[in-house]
Structures are given as C-alpha cells and as structure tokens.
Length: 102
Image (tube, rainbow, N blue to C red; front, side, top):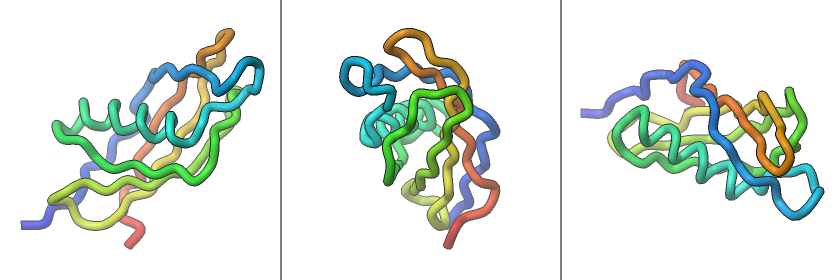
C-alpha cells in the first residue's frame, strides 16, 4: 500500500554550523542531513532530502529542497527557513508541502 506523507507544519529548531569561518552560509549537504535527522524523528524512518543550494545564514533566508520516503507516494517539496543566527550556528524551521510534487 502506498501512503501519502503527512505534512509536517513548521518543524522547528535545528541548529547547523555555518560553512567555513565567516562565510555566512550552511552547505546544502548539511541542510539536507539536518532536515533528514529532524524528519526522521517525526515520521519514524529516515527520508531522503535533497537541497540544490546552500542556505544563507540570514534570518528569513529560505531554500527549497525535496524529500522522498520509502512507502510514501511521490516527492514532496520542503521549505527550510532560517529563524535565528547566533555566532557560528543557524536555527531553522522545516515545512513539508501538503501535496506531492509528482
């Protein structure tokens, strides 16, 4: 049975180290891994998150990623939004779309 991913509204507060000293960005691979960690806690299995761009470490900055999860229908969009930056750490929210992209 194929299931639809239940949208997770505004999963908050993942902390990421900024890429390089003073660069003001979080590497796309680090954003994807942190989103996978967070979503795994929410759904009970590890998803596959892909982020095409680095995330600027500026409050309000966003990047769009995609997530797939075995046994769930389709690929979902994910919006990652920076909510707080403190020294070399960025905190962000993860919002999964309510409908699959495909």
